[in-house]
Length: 88
Picture 1 (tube, rainbow, N blue to C red):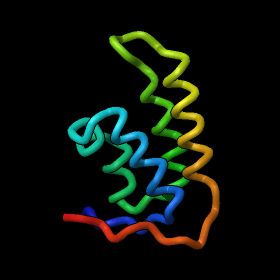
Picture 2: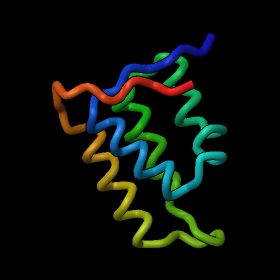
Picture 3: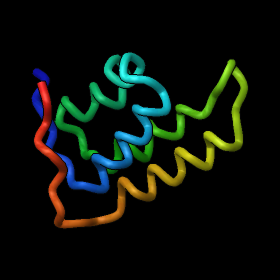
Picture 4: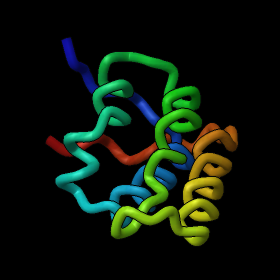
């Protein structure tokens, strides 16, 4: 069953950056979101899933490789600041 995952501000920020870049439709139907909502470790999921999103027009783009690496780094940066509450 799917449930809402609790993220800290850095995890949330990294996923906002990613979803803004790939689009809400792609983000919503992604294995990244499915895995998070299934209860997997958020940092493990981000580290494994974000780098997959590096293609534009079927071509690996160096800028997207850098962006995804920065998002993974931000996602894995510890903070006690909570993310905003989830919207439904």
